[in-house]
Length: 269
Image (cartoon, rainbow, N blue to C red; front, side, top):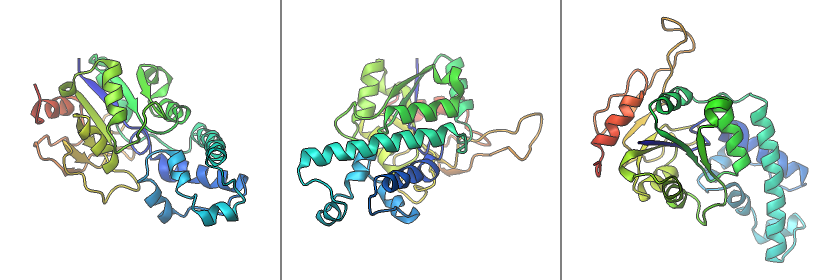
């Protein structure tokens, strides 16, 4: 059967701006670190895969001295791990508060795929507790339980390296031609493509201007119809930003659109 693999941050919910950034800054404050990332600064940091890796970009000799951090690499690594554990706790608390809504269409499309017998998974370089908290928020407890979760440090290299997707495909026994990935960033797209997978892109808060060449389709979101019989204030239609295979997934991305893209993509069997 086919498989649908979601990235987490920016795909299931727009968590970078409203979840990760405040969690990083609150952690820096709690540890007395002389840094607070602005929105513009964090827009650059998101290009670095992994929370610990983003924190490590701070560790210039000047910063280490100003913060009174140890010079020994092992001790410094342990300190970063402490920051990251606390940041994950803060972040999961933000998610549990319910202030960040799921992105349009993710639950609907996942439910369609599940009903059709597709394999469901999340593949992310974020910490596993953080990924699971967002997954449950976006999908609800019952549907979230149908997902395989691949997250954190289970692979040696973070996106844009293909490691996390290769790992997921191997562990699930998936076929490359029958697996579609949903990503929001160029790093995620490159990770999926280098793993040999087709990729749909739904840009998020910090990624709208990135280059998504190679994506099966680029859409503003998966989209959601309004509840009830007609359009309403909760309806979110899909804007098609790039459509090289002519899928035309409007007004909402459906499972049939993903099936078409899997069959139309290079390498499809």
